[in-house]
Image 1 (cartoon, rainbow, N blue to C red):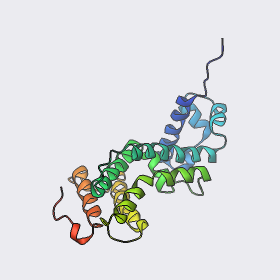
Image 2 (image 1 turned 120 degrees about the vertical axis):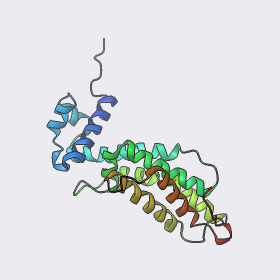
Image 3 (image 1 turned 180 degrees about the vertical axis):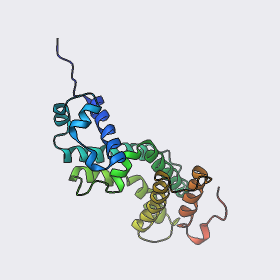
Amino acid sequence: MARPRTHDEALRLKLLDRAGELIAADGPKALSLRKLAADAGTSTTAVYSLFGSKPDLVNALYTEGFRRFGARMAGTTLTGDPVEDLVALGSAYRASALADPNLYGIMFTRSIPGFEPNEDAEKLARKTLEPLEAIIRRAIADGVFLDVPPETVAVGCWAVVHGLVSLELTGNLPEEFDVTGSYETALRANASGWLRPHLSRSEPS
């Protein structure tokens, strides 16, 4: 009978999630491969077998974060209305961040000094924003959005969602603040601001 695989996908994900927790709680210096293995109930040999070096492990964390994030973005139901679709993608962005806050920090805040993702990881990260870019390019081409460079709209939308989500994750929003309702309102106002003047909406739908 073949021996069961012990260094499998379940263990890989368990190690990644625990590594993200260690970094989030105590900073990158807390990421000891020996401690990580002990916390996950496995051996350092398993960690090396699955990831290689510590930089490879951090790259795997970055990649896994964008893999999960990309799945949420690609799985978002779109309507063809660019304003509503940008709100939907922004909501998916927040849902991904709240589901994996430890990975979010590694993905977007450069929380690991000196870390640079490899070429494949960078390609994956860029690919996750393709749904956003497609909506914006189509809206500009159709004369729905202002005739400005698509990257101007994309970065503007990203800045709004990233800023609000980061404030929420770091606990810097007022306790009485209605995060969910206000988040969607802010996203819709931002998206509507890119509409050509004759298409601007006076009230949220």
